[in-house]
Image (tube, rainbow, N blue to C red; front, side):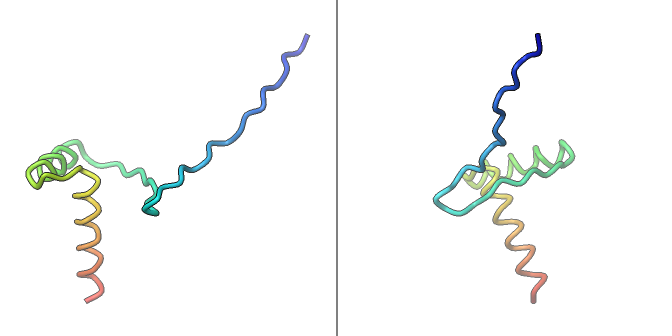
Length: 63
């Protein structure tokens, strides 16, 4: 007897109140550790540090 197919639904994106979305980025382990260390030194989460660094880098490109 054939197995019945399960209703498989695609994952739905989570809705964040602040409008941020997830993005996966691959980096060298040494760079990841440096980001974590710098974020901790600034009393931030790693994502906050990266977000600020990228925003600063992009802003300087426009000038």
